[in-house]
Image 1 (cartoon, rainbow, N blue to C red):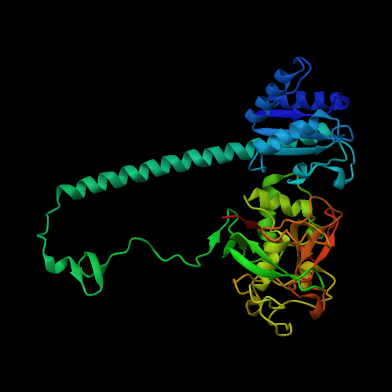
Image 2 (cartoon, helix red, strand yellow; image 1 turned 180 degrees about the horizontal axis):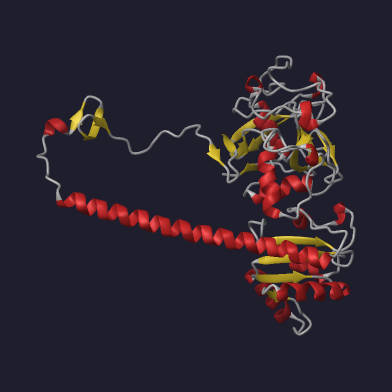
Length: 428
């Protein structure tokens, strides 16, 4: 695998150790920049190497994130080249750094941190990424061969049928019918099926529903300013990400820290409960792993309240146990605290999205802000930075009045809580 190893010059010793470990695995590593001549040729060579790389490894330290460090230029180039970050970006924390100091792009996947041998941990993470790439390639090749066999069989069948085909005389009486044009007697022809409202299914098997493009009223002048916002169409998971789906993510990535209370969960029992105890970076990494993203603050609110300014996803009626899991003080999330996703259909939103109130709070993509520019009314994405990410939904502990679809919470991205989960979205 072609790897670009990005590091600050002050971290040369540990970078050299990681480079040798990766070379021992048989990888082609772009590591030593000292032989390059300074100037435009230097920059072009770096850009070309990053573009060709199948994996960008970014070693994070106080030196690497210094505003004057060239590693930030390399990270910017990688951000422009890498569209699907899962399996293409590996940020490695060499020493503890406040998360708000880490560049945003480096936090789009889970940071690799190890209290032990960082060289061994990095080599292990790269090995697992390479194994996944190899399995995916073999799967693709196998699918292509299967398709060729199927097509070949279909062609053979058509040829065999053609040998024995006897034309049927045409007649004007059989070309049309009262039901409309026909191709075969008694069968109405159709050029396309009606797929209006048909759900899509993500690579993790999660069903998504389409929220169509258009305007809606966001805010209520209490939690946020009341204003008309336009959003492009987007798909959003019908229910929250479950423990069963998250377990597959943990097994596939190998280097992601398990959620809080994960040891108390006994799979497959509880596999349909929403996963909680994940921080924002974990949630974002999962969505990237399945080719999606976290919903924006505005997208979440539109999915929940529709276009009629309703108070709750189901309407304006007071919450009850048929609509949501709330005011639940059970001490263990996976033992009485949470309910299976999709078990409160009376509480679904006008778009058919479930569990948007109660059960688990949900991370969104946006940084939190109490003020909003009056001009930011088309696909708003919140401020560029902040101290906390927006959380929505009102978890299982909350009373009824804190489950309003306009209610906004926030927490530092590294926060983990027994009632904080997430769902994914994507732009179709």
